[in-house]
Length: 68
Image (tube, rainbow, N blue to C red; front, side, top):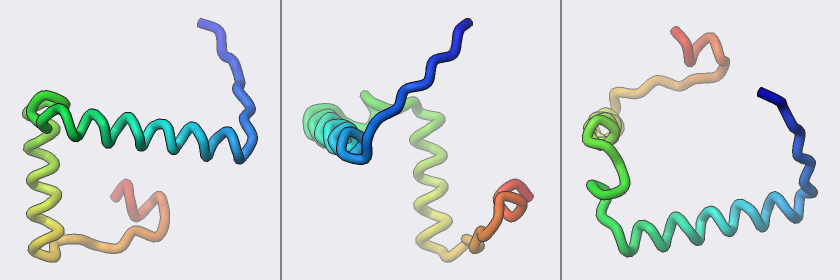
């Protein structure tokens, strides 16, 4: 498998991010989360929401914090 590098300007990157957001908003308006995501992902999302709601989080400042 070959590897290619793509170089984009800051302006092009901003346009790409805007396009992604537009597609995301559109899909979110016409499809339910159950149609977009797997049940395993939705379960993890619900668990994450529950952790945030119940303040079960810890601050991560380094990659080592993240992996431990």
